[in-house]
Image (cartoon, rainbow over all chains, first blue to last red; front, side, top):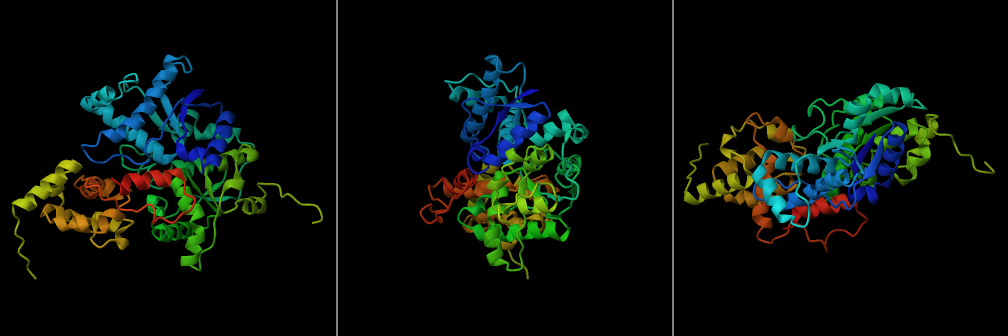
Length: 305
Length: 131
């Protein structure tokens, strides 16, 4: 299955391991993710005021690229756009929903983008997790894994943009299960966390990192008290806040203990035996000692040891 | 203690402005407080989310000066829980825009600690905090 794919800025910068691990995992289940040509930043957050149409132009221009890939024969009648980053997914889906429901706004945007073909409202924005659940099926994934992640206790962190608002979310905003089912398909053990969809503080990490660190404490402690070894996420901003902000969290809360934070695709790559593509060396809190202890990675013994 | 609230023309005008900009019927709010109990940022705020809604309803323009509207991170938890179907994230966005559209930024980038940040953090902070 060949599917168009939107990476977004951060997957080319601090979240390279997210993209790399997703690509390797997708190949194992017969999906080829084809990057959109000439994609642009979606804007990261949705425009929420009624008169601000301008900020919908960037995401809509990205959707035009999917049409062009079909027109150019790169894709054959394939309009499902796959997104890995939760924030990009949210923005692209919201703008798409706005213009498919509101012909006047679509017309305004099309008139404004006078050097681009008109957007015809044909694209469906899909998060990669939705493709795994609805197109491949978690049962099929379970059949295809090479290394079952037995004994690994994984707490899913859903965050905000994968679930809310309701019409955009990929699961029940109050009781999501998609990540739990994903974890089970890799034969790891899902661990519940009362703070699995509590906002991490998002962009407050710029200029007010302490606000984020207090939430990081709450979220990670919630997972730990329920017995988790590791947390998974699908958002590069949540990942930064939960992973890199642990240093500040430790300063503010001396009883805090570090916990590895992984992209869900890193766990998937590990289960598919693609650990070289998992990019574990790019995580802030090193997950390798934990994975070695759980016998999911072979311990590299250096000479003289 | 009973407080008498005088609603004048300028208060009504402010309410109408926020309703138009947000597209939300703020007067539908019945002050149940679910937004406040759901808000992950409430403990940082000087006015609660329900308090913000009440202020807009009575046209109390001082809410634009509150710290609370800037702490709202548009997580949409209140939005999915509001029994009256109000999208509060749109209301706080409208209130922030009233300042940002006067070309007054909420962050000074020179003041932001120089550290390596992901693009997603910088883009979203600039979108939310600058005009």
